[in-house]
Structures are given as structure tokens and as C-alpha cells.
Length: 214
Ligand code: AMP
Figure 1 (cartoon, rainbow, N blue to C red):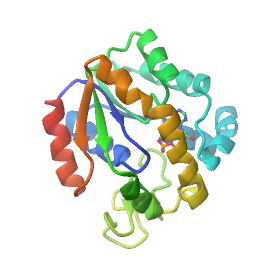
Figure 2 (figure 1 turned 90 degrees about the vertical axis):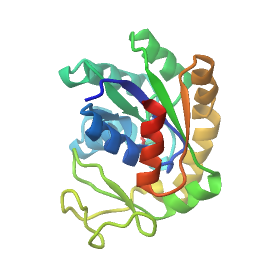
Figure 3 (figure 1 turned 30 degrees about the vertical axis):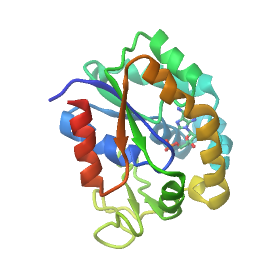
Figure 4 (figure 1 turned 135 degrees about the vertical axis):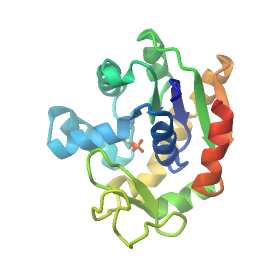
């Protein structure tokens, strides 16, 4: 068991979710994905979910105060007291500052580096599992499930997220460059950045991340 406070950074489609899940399972720490929490809130039809829905479907970021609130609450839970992997948070400098103000000192920020061309190819074929608490994702071509259209982990029928449609993909990439990419410099300046090449098989990338964080 490796009790670390890590954050996974990278453009949409870099493989953050896939890798965060693998490493979190292995280290025995929770994967805290704001995207998964927001999708879950939408499925349940909570006020938070309804507030986030239009931003998400358009590929825009949900307002800072909304995500900061859900992360602050999640980090209070017992399972997060000795370590976690933040997946998809922070996504703006304001969120990173709020995280520091919560008293969270990250041990490392894994920056998964993938070219824009590769990201577009990957997001184009992404298949996601709708089951709450599963959240596995696949790719039609590069990381297919064992049985077509079916989640390997829980057996649910896979689907294409609304924000994996072409127009939303373009908007997500724009949001990333304008609002999230500045975090690379932010964490580099604080000596936390661990760059990892995000191209190759999921197993190869996992190995590089493991080496970077150990
Ligand atoms: P993800 O599953 O991480 O790609 O997140 C899906 C969508 O949820 C994003 O495109 C945003 O609309 C929203 N979202 C997730 N995390 C954040 C965050 N930290 N800040 C703002 N919006 C977020």
C-alpha cells in the first residue's frame, strides 16, 4: 500500500481516468474523479447535477465554486485520509489555489503528455461504462473490451458520452489549452510536476507512471 496524494493532469483523452483507476487500485487509495462525480449527480438528478449538465454537454468547464465544493466534501471522507488520486481536478489555477487552501499538499502531479492529433483520434472512439462506481472506459480500436459493447468489469452496455461528440471534443480541447494547461507551469514551479509520455499501450504508460511516482 502506498499512501500518496497524487493528481493526474493532461488533456482530455490522455488516459487520466484509465491510469488513475489502475494505479489507485494497486496502491489501495481512492480515485477521486470530478467527472465521475458530476456524471453520477446528473444520473441522480440532484441540483448539482442539473447545474452541471449544460456545461458538460457543451464541453465547457463547470464553474469553479461547484467543483471546489464537491472535492472539499469528498476529501473529508475516511478513505481519503491517507492518500488519493485526484483525476480531473484541479482544472483551473483557481481550483489549484483552492486545493492548497484546503491544506492539501500534493506529493506529485503526474502530467500525461499526448499530442493533439492523438487526443482527437482517441476521443473519437471512446466508449464509457454507465455504471456508477465502475466508470471504466475503452476505445473501439486501441483498447477494446473483450466482448464488443460490453464492460469487462461489470457487464453493462457501453455508450458514447455526449461530450465525446465532435463539437464538444473541440470545445474541451479549447478549454484545456486556455484554462487547464497553465497548471503545468503552476505545478512545475512548485517542484511537483512528473512528466510521463502518454503514448503506447495502457500497460506501458502505467509502468512509466509507476516509475515516476516511486
Ligand atoms: P472528465 O470525465 O474528467 O472528462 O469530465 C467531464 C466533464 O465534467 C468536463 O468536460 C467538465 O465539463 C466537467 N468537469 C470535470 N472536472 C471538472 C473540473 N475540475 N472543473 C470544471 N469542470 C469539470
